[in-house]
Amino acid sequence: MIPEVGLYKYVKARDEVTEAARPLAQRKALYSSVVAQITLRTLYELFKADRMKHLDIIVFNGYVSSIDRGTGRPVRVCLITVRTSRDIYMQLDLSKVDPLACLNMLNASVNTSRAYLSR
Image 1 (cartoon, rainbow, N blue to C red):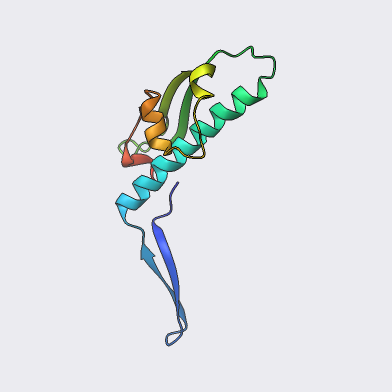
Image 2: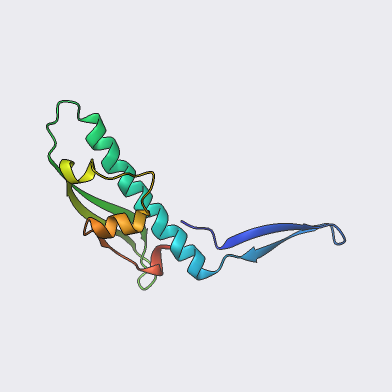
């Protein structure tokens, strides 16, 4: 969840804290970036933990639990699906990639719905 509030500011003259909304475009970009970074990090950890090299290919599906705004009922939504081999993944220089561009290169399928930015 990316907070709708982007900034809190103390106003000394009124002795109160005001808040400013985070723009929707910024919230969407941050959310996509977080999902991409978590995905890439999880793949990295799985391949690095496999010291005996038993894993050749990983299929990662990232889900989020939320509330369907149309029905009010709980839903479990797949945000991302990616399949990659050890050979391809270990050639990446993760310190220099843009997470979203990297997932695009790996042919990931990303759910770009804004419905899950907040509850």
